[in-house]
Image 1 (tube, rainbow, N blue to C red):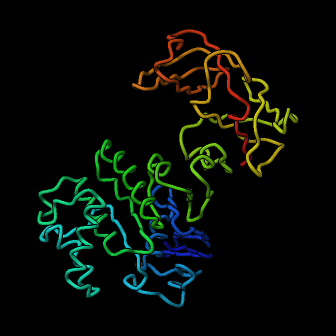
Image 2: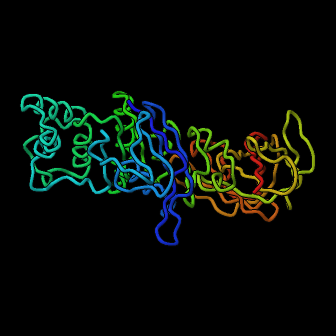
Image 3: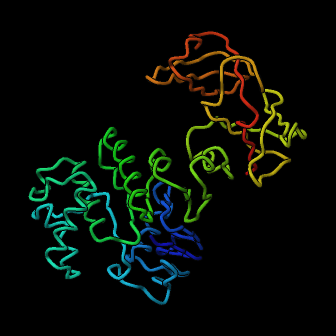
Length: 355
C-alpha cells in the first residue's frame, strides 16, 4: 500500500489549461475515483501520476518520494505502479501466460517464481485455466480480467485505472465493478480510478473527486458527494436532481432555512455544508426524495408522464409550473396512474446552494 500526494499541479496544452493548481491526497489502501466529463483533466492527472506526462508546475509524491515536478520526471518503470487501460492493451500474438510474464522477465524474476506469480495473479481474477490461451479466444470480460491480472502480477504499490470497463456491455460492466472493488479491498492496494460513469464511481470509490475545468470541485465519500454536494455543479452533475430557483426568507427550525420558490410557495430546506444562508440560490431535490402523500413540504401537482422502468417508475409532474421528476418503487401498490397528486419531501432532502 502506498500514499499519493499531488500538490499544486498544473498542465497547459497551448492555450488550454488542462489542470489548474490541483492538489489531492490519497491514503494507503484507499480507492480514489476521479469523476468528470470528457476534458475535465482527469486523464491528464492519471497520466502524470503514471509517469507519462510531466507537470508544468507542482509536485507528485508516492509514499513521500518525489516522482514528478516541473524539474524532474521519474520513469514509469521506477515508480512501482501498474495501469489498467480502457483498450485492454494485451498483445494478441502472445498467450495469456506470456502477456503476464513479460513484465516479470524485464525485472529478471527467476523462472520458477515468475510462473508462481503468474498463476497466482490469474487465480485472483478467476482465470486460472487460461494461461495457454490467446486473447482472441477470450471474451471481452475475460480479456479485461487478463489486463487486470497483468497489472497485479507486478505487485504494484499503486494501481491506476483508465476507464477500464467502458468497452464492456452494460451487464458485464456492472458485474466487473463489484469484482474489482472486492479484489482491491482484499489485496489492500491503493487505487486511482478514472471514469465518467457515476454508478461506477459510487460503487468503486472510498472517496470521489469530482472534477471540472482542470480543478477538483469536491472530494468526499459517495454519500457525501450525493447528499451533501457543496456546489451547484456537483449537485447537478452527480445523479438526477430537480433544480428550482429559490430565495431565503428566514431561519427555519433546527438550523434549517425557509426558502421561497416561485409557483411553489415557502419550503423548509437545508443549507449546504459551509454554504450560504441568505440571498438567492438554487434548491436541489433528488427525484427519489419526493414521495406521494402529505407530509413535510407538501406540494400539489398533476401527472404529465408515467414511465415504467422495471424496478422503478418515473413520473413527470407539473407542480406550480415546474416540471418535477419523481422516481418511486414500482412495487408500491399506492402509486397513482393519472390526475392530481399530493407530494411531500423531507426538509433535509431539500438542499439549498448559493452559486
